[in-house]
Length: 487
Image 1 (cartoon, rainbow, N blue to C red):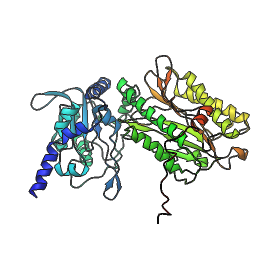
Image 2 (cartoon, rainbow, N blue to C red):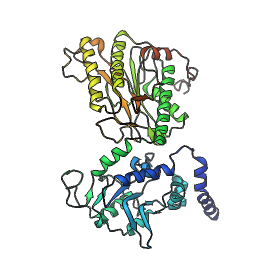
Image 3 (cartoon, rainbow, N blue to C red):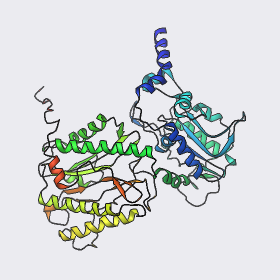
Image 4 (cartoon, rainbow, N blue to C red):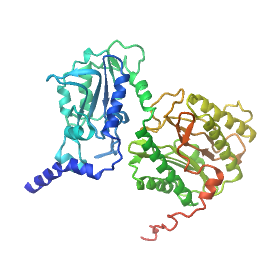
């Protein structure tokens, strides 16, 4: 028993040092996060406080949880990646009981020898001070005793709660308790009347909508450090598309193709996926967010639509390529593909500061409608149809559909342009078009006078794709044993 205690003590004492030594060196710096907090402070209304909670731990099944992913806003302001925490950022300086002034305070989960042996190292309040530069960091059990007078603020800004957080009975300061304690402190109403579900002016000082515009204006304009990470995520995702093009063969499964992409992501040290991987062959490509990826045997005649994005240091790419399983587009596939490509390239020409998201979508829709009419798939350019059912653009960053305004483009925004055509089986057109689904999605940095196509390294023109698919793959000789014969 003494030996176990000694082991835990040694492990505990060296945890923060080991964590620093074992981690990559290109995370966002504490100076970046500090600057973000100051940018928020500048945008907050007079006499206000903004409150942010860490993401909840989500249970996968029984005693296994999903891999934890921090709330992007919380990460944006802190760099902290652990649960059960709350951050307060004040517009103005506050005075503590000891007379010290502060304008931000964070409460984080404490160090715990036994918990860290099972689920990993924790920073604790001292680690947050040392590594993340948040001077006013405290054990989350102290939040209950934190006695700031919230009634004195004109506005308390926070994102409203969805009441979907578990209460762990063994922890009196988990996220559930922190939220419960916050609600008591700010006199949060027992129902949502007057909060998120009611956008009429509120009679109290609780503001659950104001942060949406503020955070959108902050997060949509990327700092240089963010752009470096987004570009890395995009390059990794493009490399995945290239390797799959080289490895593609009839008879592979959707799941196998997903695995190649995600292996490339991991090989380049991407921690996660920006969203569930979409790999749809044939008619499955017509399901916009198809994530089953179950089809065991893709065939020579099919296209395969692959929408995947690596998440690197918190920032995600979002890239889609559609390629022929055989390595060569059929005449019908090529016609649809080049129509989608033309729509994307027309939008790219107009993609610059001052252009609206609506304009980009309208450009792609005009090109696609004319093309579908010329191909005889629709009767007129004004016909209502569902072959192109989505918009063409969105912000990317810490979220794959990142926070930001959807009006005019501005310098240092990063967006997608992703037109598509999806013709399902039994569509009201010639059956030669059935099960053709094409989406081409690329990522663009809005520059001072135009845009930078940051996902250009993933082939997107017909001849480029077909040429890449002829190249040898390092996976050509990777043959696993037949499990059935091995019985």
